[in-house]
Amino acid sequence: MIEEDKSLNFIEEIVEEDLRNGTHDGRVLTRFPPEPNGYLHIGHAKSICLNFGLAQKYNGKTNLRFDDTNPVKEDVEYVNSIKQDIQWLGFQWAEELYTSDYFETLYQYAVELIKQDLAYVDDSTAEEIAAAKGTPTTPGVPTPYRSRSIEENLQLFEDMRAGKYKDGEKVLRAKIDLASPNMHMRDPLLYRIKHAHHHRTGDAWCIYPMYDFAHGQSDSIEKITHSVCTLEFVPHRPLYDWLIDKLEIFPSKQYEFARLNMTYTVMSKRKLLQLVNEKHVESWDDPRMPTISGMRRRGYTPSSIRNFCERIGIQKRENMIDISLLEFFVREDLNKSAWRRMAVIDPIKLVITNYPEGQVEELVGENNPEVEGGEGSRIIPFAKELWIERDDFMEDAPKKFFRLGPGLSVRLKHGYIVTCHDFKKDENGKVTEVHCTYVPNSKSGEDTSGLKVKGTIHWVSVAHAKEVEVRQYDRLFQVENPAAEEDFKASINPNSLQIVEKAFVEPDLLNAEPGKGYQFIRLGYFTLDSKSTPDHLVFNRTVTLKDSWAKVNK
Image (spheres, helix red, strand yellow):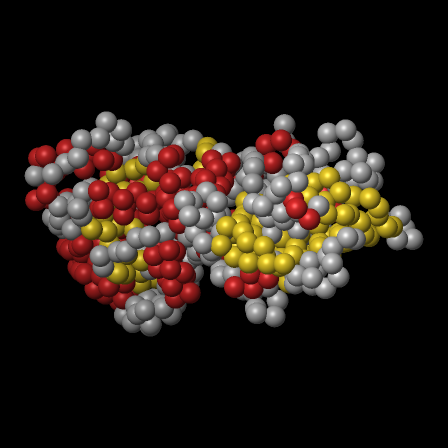
């Protein structure tokens, strides 16, 4: 039964029309067909959410098909990362398939086209073929090999498969229309020779189908009902349909939507690979990268990415999405799910001079006050000496500074009201210690002091704090559209990573797990880095508490 939905996107409208008409016997079968030559990024997440989302909404299925037709650039590492990313986003495929599963079938399809005199072997170089194709305003001309006989083409193609020729020596082309206004229809390449080891088929093949040939035929073999691509494949659709028509195979249909373009980001795999290879970032899963694995390592949640993809919707026209929208959904999700903890990243010592020497109290803090019941609580040790943020003390505080300074009072989060009466400096004039007195009957939850203060600051006990490294990540590029720059790498943000080698956190964070979000109170959202070790804990900043970038760049 089709759900009524007034806000259907145009692809959902097509699916519902097909279901009403009984097209494909009421089936919905989509596919996600990545090439395993790199890691998936946020643009792929949009396609994943669309393809798997359509199947979920209309009681269908989605196949995961690896387009592994270029052995030179592909690797099993990418296959494994892609599978992990899809599952992390919350989706599961019906079948795991590979274009290489169909190499024999695709070869026979090519033979069938030759037999129909719809394909021929061309000995021309790549440059000669490009020149013979003409221009968008002038028709192409046939190469000397277009008039080869069917018999000769069949033998040459068989010899190509047998490995009798070198890379680039011959190609198989479709015979369509050299005067077509669509350049993709001017006798496109179907097969090329590549003597390269394939990660699944080994050395069984030395000829490989081009994407335009393998794509539609693989869809047809799997009986895909709705083949969803991005807009750059619009001019490829006539070839997609032509091949299916001439081969008289299952009529899969291709539909196109606008790819995701996002500010302060590049989406090109080639450019992302440059960033990795030239060491501008640590790896494909560097938390500054727009890869799904990078976002996972940074602490983004699957639901925040899914919600973002749903919000931006499916369009027919290209547009630019502001990255702050993605960060909004990350903050919104983490605000509801992240446990609150205290951490100090620029420490200065606070000494409570009238607190009993050697006394330790166990204060209690809720894990998440945004959730009813708080999701439990944890114990926070409190003692005479604490670490506080250097920014929370000023020697000459202005009138509306509601933190610590001589004569000023604040509440220590979950603890007591303290008043500053003194401080110490080193020989360079840098404040090293702040001295305060506390009000014993002002404890949070039990306060009978009647005192009111406007500021609350966070802290950790010096004796109980755990030393960690904190990595504060920001946007990788300084300009909104780095891809449009003459050299996109020139706009890399030099402050995209700032490392605090010696920060202090409350002891409960020794139990932190990679992927779980924590709000470091007043500092931002963080997660334990997946490459941390028990001896060296590293926390990555996922996102700030507020969109500070907008203020800086006004």
